[in-house]
Length: 251
Image (cartoon, rainbow, N blue to C red; front, side, top):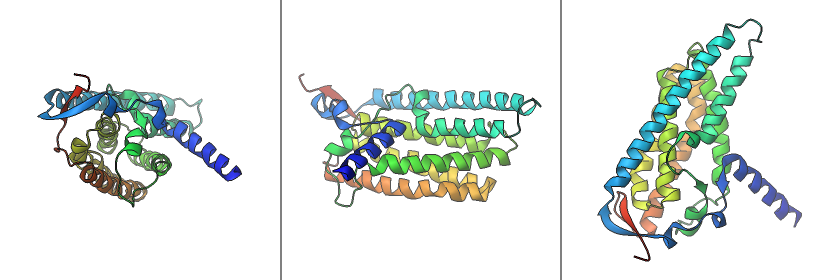
């Protein structure tokens, strides 16, 4: 009983840190909407515009951080380690809560994963926020190393690619977790979070090999996640690999 209670406390802590809502806190999309076999052009535009705006906003935030850190570094009254601490906290915010910069609904919820048919080898729901916490720490370490290598600059190619990767991941979360578009989620997870993770890891590696090695674990996990998304798509009807138009069930 104590073990079950401790497990519940750990789960609550992990979900709170990562902003994951239990399934019973969000109404099931399947009770509200039903797909029809037609491309939802409006959804494609929303995803594209939403992702682009999020990237632009985060780039502006990078610019703001660069100005702030420059001021701190030039202020002799502040300790030399202060800018590094601030930068680490900034990358922690980006890694855990990048969705605050998105106009899309990026709610983290277990509901879709709990309700779809999954392969036998699929990890239990609690594994995901735990692994993402680990990846968040690795992202912070690797990004700080790159930032140091780039002479405390934020508006550099590796870090810009990093925020692009985060934005693509948030958009995928909207498509899969929030809207439950299982077909569209397949190409998006491959061309979005997975491919961008590989690119960011490669660029980080070129900038600082230790940073690249640190971030490479995210590529391994996203490869597993991409395969899982593909199998879920297969097991749940193999709908078209594009966003379908959605209509209210009561219509």
